[in-house]
Amino acid sequence: MAKSRNQRKKSVADARVQYSLAMRVVMHFSIFIVAGTFFGIINQFLADPFGSVKENLMTFFRSSAPFLIALVCLMPVFVRDTLTLSNRVAGPIHNMRNTIRSLSNGETDVRPLKFRKGDFWNDLPDSFNKMVETLRNSQPVSTDTAASAKSQAAPNKELVEV
Image 1 (tube, helix red, strand yellow):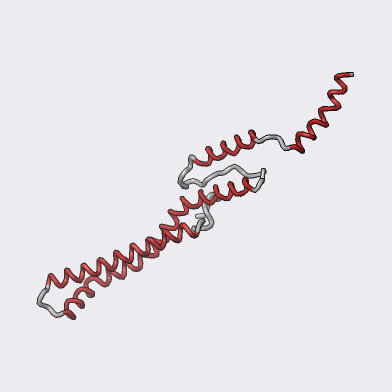
Image 2 (cartoon, helix red, strand yellow):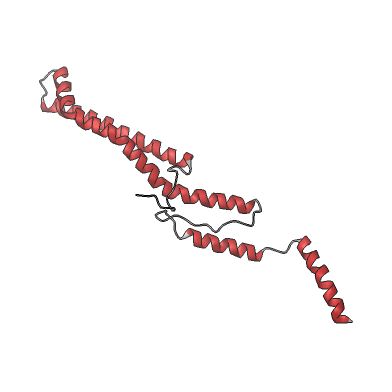
């Protein structure tokens, strides 16, 4: 299936934000695995309190190792999904930030802001674009433009007076 033109080319729009979220997922997932292992071992010792430590650990790992390996293998899937989902948040904000920077640098030929289908905050571009248009329309005329308008209006005024 061909990718639509509207699809993001990168899964990371704002590395600082998105990698922070990804690291948080890795941390929580790791804590989950460690806690699950800890409580599984305790459960194994409670199930066979008179067995040796080695036997209980071997029994636990024999029964739980496939599950623990599956969890470790799933971690990259969770991280990738977090990056993809967070791109729907970070991407629009990244685009808005770039547009704001362009406008604040005095660029006047800025394309209207538009988010992709599936991005969060789909109501923001309309409000933002209206705000930009209002600001453009309410900007005072610069002194160069005012002087030029006066010089062009002066000959017309003279013609009317004569």
